Image 1 (cartoon, one colour):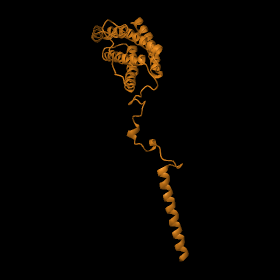
Image 2 (image 1 turned 135 degrees about the vertical axis):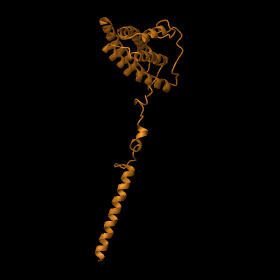
Image 3 (image 1 turned 180 degrees about the vertical axis):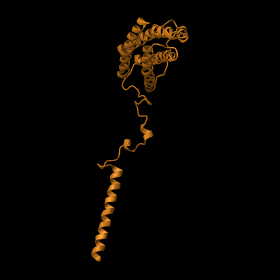
Image 4 (image 1 turned 90 degrees about the vertical axis):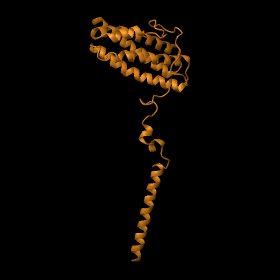
Length: 220
């Protein structure tokens, strides 16, 4: 009877030690180190990590005035392109025009959010006074290459079908060419690697879209 009691006592002690070891491993991790922040963070804490679509990351590294000017000018430039693209709804007829509209919306809206994050990270305002005659344009006072005038936008809004397709292609070619010129200037004079990379993306993407818009005009 005494032997049975001693055996039960040893078994209980062993089970208690195993349970304590399990609790220690849970608290410290399998390798004995403290658990990482990512392992204990709630899903809501990690959902908007820097660089995600919900929270664009600032551009790391040094920057100069050219980088700031590029972002400050390209944001309203992109915003007008999106305004032009929205006018295509119910007005555009050509399938290729509609595809380009979708591509413009898909690319430029995220770029706007990205550049706003840069300016916030750099401690610079989201807009600047561009009334210094910088760039070309259509005599509308925007001072940015390729920006449409109020008259241009009214012309586009009043067109439908093939007339809209043609006007959209003509105006977007000029708009894109202005954006490419601004991006080329950033590639030449900018300092921040992230900003210069986006400028390169603008040059490549919008140059290809200009070529496609010219093909569309040739067959309309």
